Image (cartoon, rainbow, N blue to C red; front, side):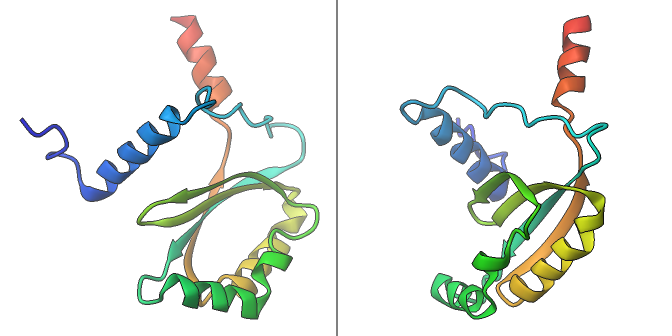
Length: 138
């Protein structure tokens, strides 16, 4: 029997990455829950920086160096909640910031990441407390 045969390559890679991460020495499980955003006047945004697979890693890094992306992102006043590499996909970053910083975040991405990554952005919220409450109620 081949247990991974029914999984797509992407799902298989994610499953493998998760298993490897949990197997690392000193890894106690999933990261601590991010602090909640409800009522604190901030929003969260998750950004997929999808690797441009027509470029080598050296070309991507050279583009990021040319644009100064690593120095300008994230902009001042923007908190990085998480930043993960997803093998075969790229990087996934979740930010927390006041709503008035949205344009600044968008410009930092357009000026710095475009040309190295294809980007997707999604409004995000922390579901973990809701999930825990629902789980404990049963």
